[in-house]
Image (cartoon, rainbow, N blue to C red; front, side, top):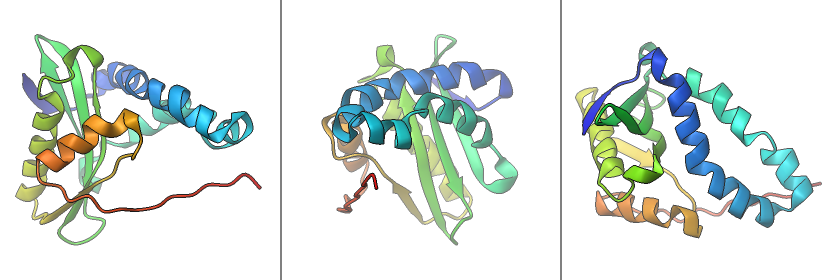
Length: 160
């Protein structure tokens, strides 16, 4: 596996990878949980949201970076992180691994890569967030495996 910086030509593949990665979460978990109307109002354009957001996530001058994992010339995953919002703090914003490459240490290697890159830039504390649902169980296990401490946070939403 080779981890490299994002290049503009990666964007279509990364958008597709991200949409395919999170489709089961949005359509299989969030939609039934929220119900049709609240889902439509809050996440109804989730695929387009990724299409709009991903191009903005790589801006090294602003402390936002994307790294890409390749296996045999195929994009296997991506990680997005940012630094500079708070002194000595970094945040992993997004991690996605293509289905055929899951359970092969791709996510772990991407996380370790991002953390090492942040450390080079003076980061001492790294944050990452994920869901408490079954879809995110492997992400939680990964983050705990590489030393992150779980911080219980409650989130609530209501259609008014």
